[in-house]
Amino acid sequence: MSNQKSAFVTTSWDDVADDQAGLLDILKNHGLRGTFNVVTQWVENPKSEIDNVGVNLLREIESKGHEIASHSQSHRRLSDLQEIEAKIEIEKSKVDLERIMGHKILGIAYPYGTYDSKIVALARNAGYLYARTVREGRLDFEDQNPHELGVTIILPRAKQARRFWLYGSRGQYLFLQLRENFRWERIARKLFVKALNSQGYWHLVGHFRDILEDKTLRSSLESLLSFIADLGEGQMRPVTNAELFTPHNTRFQSTMETKTMPN
Ligand SMILES: [Zn+2]
Image 1 (cartoon, rainbow, N blue to C red):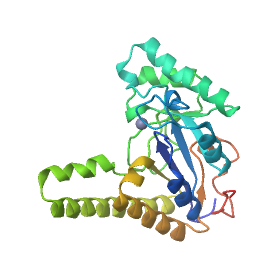
Image 2 (image 1 turned 135 degrees about the horizontal axis):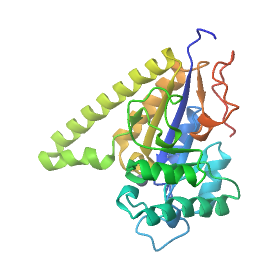
Image 3 (image 1 turned 30 degrees about the vertical axis):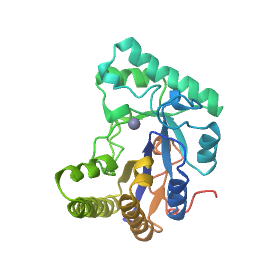
Image 4 (image 1 turned 180 degrees about the vertical axis):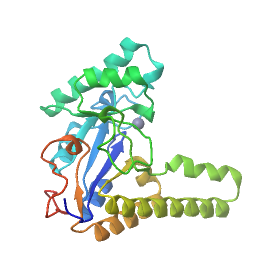
């Protein structure tokens, strides 16, 4: 085993909707890859309250080296549902996504990150290789239950930042939002350094809609990813969520690749 610093780096993007070209470019610019979690009832459904998710977009995401995974059928809290309903949400979203994409779907992200032991069993039995939660602070994945995969850090929600608007003038709102984003980014950087030093993993979760709606958040994300691309050069391995669990991902390779993404 080498003493070389190395880390797996992955990102997750929930609630895939249209107009997220900005995010694909950001990831490409920094040589990073990710998993895009799709609510299957939102696919090709113009009546949906949120934007229609086009099949072409899903194909485009995949063609850029990313993974398409499930985020359930209708984005309800799975642990609040009757077991039979939860089972359908978990199983049918997989079947539908497999039909749309024409191949096996390996992962699911629990909506709102809520789950319990019954949900974990349902995800495993449905044939998912892994299931992602929103439990933060994890710097390794190998000691985790793959159907309760925790993450390293969550990108702050634009809506959460906007909450400060209620408490002050416009100036105060902007100030607080900047400060919050700064602190978040600083923690994310520290965790990446820790992941590198411990030969661990760094996993960022976000909602790309928030990035498009919130310019401060977007620039904060770009600055973070630049930091990671620079510091991690030659030492990190950018992967999708599923690739963490697939055998070709040998951890201690003598040459770590940084640019594994096709155009
Ligand atoms: Zn979601």
